[in-house]
Length: 230
Ligand SMILES: NC(=O)c1ccc[n+]([C@@H]2O[C@H](COP(=O)([O-])OP(=O)(O)OC[C@H]3O[C@@H](n4cnc5c(N)ncnc54)[C@H](OP(=O)(O)O)[C@@H]3O)[C@@H](O)[C@H]2O)c1
Image 1 (spheres, rainbow, N blue to C red):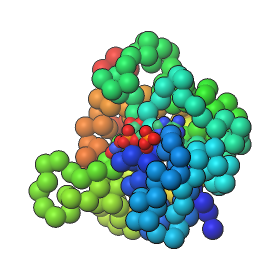
Image 2 (cartoon, rainbow, N blue to C red):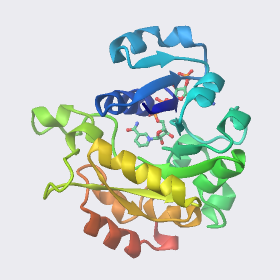
Image 3 (tube, rainbow, N blue to C red):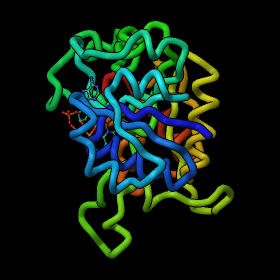
């Protein structure tokens, strides 16, 4: 049985916990506070979920998701994450997090900064362009589902959508590819992390993130991205 450590219990973390459990995974979830604050959520998620401090979730998991924005002063379980694959869901949103000059200048990507925070972990950008909330505007009952549920399809379905993965570690790309498949998505490898700006907010692929894009469309949109026109 594979246990996913999910650090962050907001919209992204809790929804990813729900779909992961539905796909057959166990989940240990944490926020920035104590596990007691997650009692109601864990009750809703059922017996395959438990709450823990972030450091315990990182230690107990086979792989880990960081579902919170990047901050230079983030308190992270660096030692417990050493050697593990870490899926970073964060997007660089300057309006929310402030500006980082090394990102704005194109010198670094937000995921390279996360990798630097976790030097012995294998960081992968993942799940950044699928919505963990309902569609807006709502056109019908299906749009009330989070995008990650509404857009999921079985392998081989003609309308299956693809999600991007970027990493400096091939084994992280392999893990994310399998995980995406389990959750109902194809994968497009846009490695290394220095190339992950191609799937950031404002890029050609980003314009299709609400209703998704096929593997071929995603590859084409990633190629069309231009550094100075994100
Ligand atoms: N929401 C989406 O649809 C969506 C889609 C794609 C990508 N994303 C990305 O996913 C990330 C999370 O988004 P969100 O909407 O879920 O944010 P959110 O609602 O603000 O939730 C953030 C969660 O992370 C926890 N947290 C913060 N720092 C932590 C730390 N060091 N260790 C453990 N937990 C920590 C917070 O804990 P407390 O509750 O204790 O404060 C909170 O539970 C963002 O970076 C966003 O860009 C979101």
